[in-house]
Length: 100
Image (cartoon, rainbow, N blue to C red):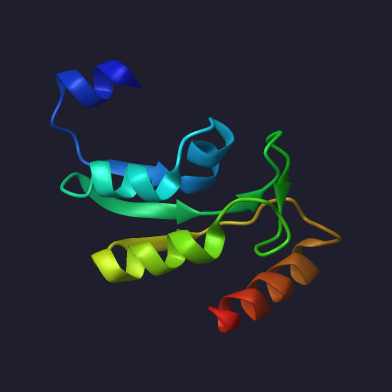
């Protein structure tokens, strides 16, 4: 990670859930790398790394979504836990996104 950031000028695509899971602040990370971001992955989950449908975890999904919109960063929404099934998880994520 450090070498990619410090030794290249590559554009970045940051998964904000894994930033959260690593104990870092996703908002601060977006601000720090704003000039290199092409998009973010918006995902939710628990601090221990277990993924959850959007709005059902501990990651700061709403704040990250708001910040990405403010910064004009494209957002890829991810939810991959199949909880309780893929179709139901997708529907729950859509409903959550409507609240943002």
